[in-house]
Amino acid sequence: MPSLPELQAAFARAVIERDEGPLLVDWIVSGRGLDAQARLGVYRNNVLSNYRKAMRAAYPVVFALVGEAFFNHACDTYASRYPSRSGDLNDFGGEFGYFLAGWPPAAQLAYLSDVARLEWAVERVFHAVDAAALDLHALALVPQEELPNLRFELHPASRIVCSPYPILRIWQVNQPGFAGSQAMELHAGGDTLLVIRRGATVELERLSAGELSLLQALATDCPLARAHAQALEAEPGVDLTALLQHHVLSGTLVAFRNGRQ
Amino acid sequence: MREAEHAGRNPGAIPIRTGIGLRTPHCREIVESRPDIGWVEVHSENYFCEGGQPHRFLELVRADCPLSLHGVGLGPGSAEPLDLDHLRKLGRLIDRYQPGLVSEHLCWSAAGGRHLNDLLPLPYTEEALAHVCDRIEETQRFLGRQILIENVSSYLQFRHSTIPEWEFLAEVSHRSACALLLDVNNIYVNSVNHGFDPRAYLASVPAAAVQEIHLAGFDATGACIIDTHGTRVADEVWALYREAIARLGPRPTLIEWDTDIPALEVLLAEASKAAQVLEEAHAVAA
Image 1 (cartoon, rainbow over the protein chains, first blue to last red):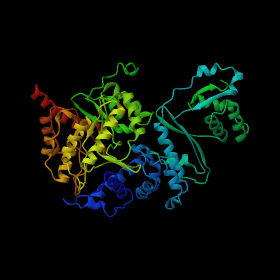
Image 2: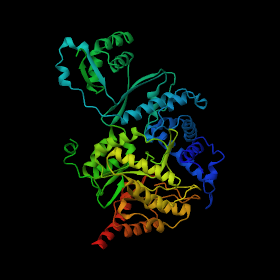
Image 3: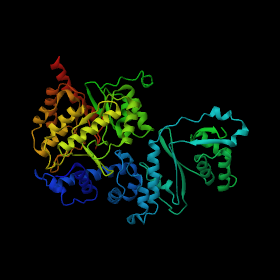
Image 4: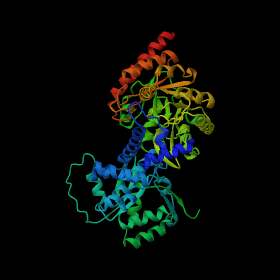
């Protein structure tokens, strides 16, 4: 007779790794039309289909790109290599992009892992914490000479995703109801995207090289002067005033403080 | 502070009426049309995230309607330490929404840090009973409130079980001082899958402990009945529900529908069938 930990460990192995071991089936009652293996099989199906459902909800574009059979095969393999670590199924699937990048059956679809990383960013941004808008009045009151010292905070529901492939276009043509041309030039150049929730909606916005440097510097708590210098290095002649205005007014930046304080 | 924050909000107690599981496809319609629902229940984990649209809708619904939080991920029967991070998230959710009821399942779900994210069956042994009661008590202490524990559907039984499921359930409630969420559909499903008399099960349920009832539809197309929550409540389950209400007295009753989610009006029609049973029972009591 197994102890509770022994029983549960064997059960988990049987379901996740299809390794029923010598004992588990002997611990299960057969009969009423189903033997022990078939009964375990019901649980294996339930568990895998829960994982698949969760992944399908988080990765609709990957699903659309590869179809159900390939997607399910990828999910099942993923689940065995990156087991769920949370009782909240919404946490499951975060490494799917990294998994796809190294999974031989997906090797022909080099953009797939970046699309998956984009979808996970969209998923997380959709559910991330809300933030109040930046206090424009207080910002207007900051004396001109103090501006270089300001440090800004990015919206907690925002992420940056970069790819050498046109993942924005791939994402857009695979949205439900998309009616335009499906034509795609995969080597037309990559995308650097800001994924951000504005109101209830997740938006994707292309960033220029200077804009990316500016936001990355601000996200790591650099004062505005240093962030500006990094942006100029990435993109000579970048218009700081225009960028700052855009990201303040569109809610990318949600708070600021004077860095000398 | 907490009371001040929630002043003016609909009181939290779950009325002895029927409620529905609040699911994403119905949120907007419920907020806009405000159907006459006694209360709603959500899966706790779906609100562990901190912001965005799901919380906006839930805030709006909660302003008008008592709420029950139903956990699917704690798995108090797992033979490993309780996930305190999970409990902290649940605690935050309770603080935010002031639910009338908080429930979990009589099951396990993780081994060796791997989560199977399913409601897995326990062996009904003294060892499992002592373990799950400890975990339920720990959960109640952590949350500072009584929780409800729900009987689950199962597709297998372990040979070394020594206690009938119904006695195990009653003993869990007695030892850990938790309340019960009686899923009448799950009793029926298990009675068919394992071959016992569902009426004998009902007869041993400690009536005073039952604070909520669940009803749902199952799939009987395979060799055993699968609890899919994907269709209307079966006639046999309605019959068993009437018997449960006759024995226990009227109890808040929830219609769960989680897969192949139908139009809201279909779900509300199921809820009003249950409401009729409750009204008849109220009439008898009066």
